[in-house]
Every structure is written in C-alpha cells, then in structure tokens.
Length: 149
Length: 277
View 1 (cartoon, rainbow over the protein chains, first blue to last red):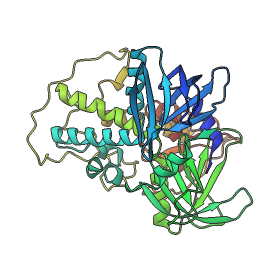
View 2: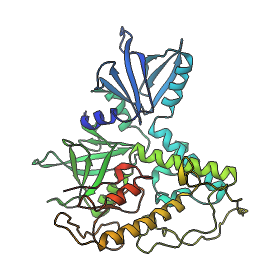
View 3: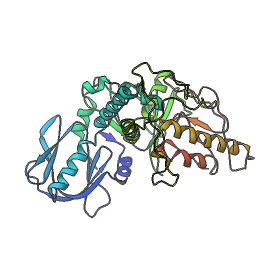
View 4: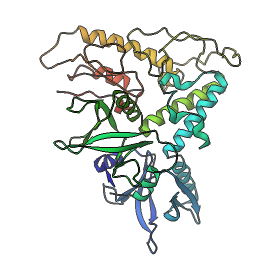
C-alpha cells in the first residue's frame, strides 16, 4: 500500500502525547524483546531504535485493543486478528497504566465518540447545539447515531 | 517505515459508514495523467482503491498537517491536498461535479486528528463551564459581522438568540472576574463566540489597515472569489478553512502575517497559510 512517507516522518517528529523507552516485542512467533523509543503522536504509535532519529515503524491505532499483560506490560492487537499482539514492557505498573489509558484515548474513533457525547450533554443542559458555532453540526460523522455503531 | 498495513486495509474496508466516499481523478505526478480512483475518507486517512469493489487500497494519504486548496488545472473541479516542507508532495485531485468537489474540500480540510481534538477540547471546556454553572451566557450574542459569510450549514454567524425550545434555563451566575494577566489568558473564561468576536474585530481593524497601505512592488494581492464566500472579498485569496469561515492568504511577507498570527492563536496552525514570494 502506498502512503505519504515524508509526511509520516514529519509527524513522527511532532510533539508527542507520550514518549518513553519501552521493551517492545513484535507479533511474530519467536520475536525477542528490544529496547525501543516509543512515541504516541495523534493516532499513530511510532517506534524508533533508541539512537536513531527516524522511526523503524508506526502503528495506526484504529480498531485496536489494549490489554494489560503481567507484569507491568501491555499489548496492542487489532480487530481483524486479536491473537497477533505487539507487546510492550514498562518499567513500572504506574507507567503501564498511564500508557494504556493514553493509547485507549488515542484513536480518531474515540475522539469522535467523545465529541458526540459532549455535544449531546451540552445540548441537554443548555438546549443549544455547540457544533453550530463551528459550522459542522450537519456533518454525518458527528451525529448521535454514530454512538450506537 | 513499516506500517501495520493489514490493519490499515481492514480499517479502510470496514462496515461502518465512511466520512466521505466517491470517485476522484488523481494526478499521477507532476507531468503524469489522471487516474480515476475510488476514494474513501475515514478519520484522518484518505484511502484510494482501484475501484469501489476492491478489498485492498492502492494507497493512503495521511491527512495530518495538510491544507486543502482550489487549484487552476486543466481538469475541471480540481483541488489540491498540500503538505508543508520543501520536497513535500502535493496531491492534485479532481471531482466529477462542483458539488462533489465542494463536499470533498470541506471534508478533507476538517479531517485531521488535530482539528477534531481542538473541537473536543473546546466542548470539554464548555461542558465543564456549564456544569459549574458559569457557562457561556446564552442570552446575547454579538450582532452579525457584516463582512463574514454565512455558515455552510445555513445558520447565520451571530444571529440574535431565539428562545430555547427546551427546558427554561435560569441565567447562570456571572463567572468570576479574571485579570488579563491570568496564566491562560482569555481562553479560560471566554466562550468561543466571544473569542470569535474579539478576534473578528482585530481582523477587521488589521484588514482595513492592510488594505489602506499602498501596494509595494513585492506585494501582489489578488482578488479571488472563493466558492464558499457569499460575496467576493478583495485583496487576498479566500480559501475554505475548517474553523474560521475563511482564511486569508496574502502574497507578500507583510500582508497576511499579522492576521495569521492572531488567528493562529486559537486555530490549528495548518489552517493558516501565508505564502511568501
């Protein structure tokens, strides 16, 4: 699949929501844990060799599951293949929980659901649609029916 | 760079309705031909397929940090997705109708995660303010600014408040007084409407100042009609933007910059573009 690599590179250099050196293990059988600099930017999780400026790779965090693994670790898997897991080892349970919370909030789909939720709440409390100010109240992607999907 | 392509393909073809979909012509390269592709916009990812029935995308354009513009091209209904950076690629696309083009430009310019996050944060603040009882004053909004075009969804910009149809709301208590030197400045306590009005006033003042200065050999200001403005605006290019009804693109280093800096304070930087000669 072709993609705009330069822009993805530029994105990996943007200020990150979370960044830390973690132990990472790929989904393939027999892969070993390697120290990687892991960086969360918008809905992408970039991972770098600790001494390099360019990422080795990126994971798009849509339709993914973040699961707690013992000890102080978590895994990311995707909807189409839940057994295929990317493992991350943290240095403490606290760091692990922090990362899990951040990753669960990091998807576009999560943002969209939050928007719909806040819009609905504000509408209930004030009787006004807060999206009208932005001129986006008619967009299909922000309708309440989206929450039921 | 490695990408989780299998998951990407899955995301591209999943059952939930896409944010936008349709045929577009995509220019292969600078001197290449156009190819008709099936485009699917999902979140901040613009996928393109050989045709509507394909199970795997030919490619994807990641839409963070881009601007979407109308372009002059041989092809009708053409627009471009442009990225910053010296060697950055510009994707030239063409729709099959004026309406389709407008729909795509609108959708793509508001597709970034950054934009969505901005809106969500604004709503979070509004909800917190409403819950605390000191929410944005519902009663009076500023009068319509005559130079602003009306919103795409048909609502006038700052129309006088109509009485709320639902449960009557007691006027909220006044929010606590804040000094201008407060750490987070006016953003903390002002509603979006107020900020819009304040900056709007500044913009008008700057604009009249800017238009009254004589043109220098280096400044070329064009009169362009944007398909989204209700009437022509003179002196600069008007391009659709996600948050502001229009944004200003001057053609000289001085022109446009003060406006960009002011507006850039609340709006995401990629909305604003000052191209210098």
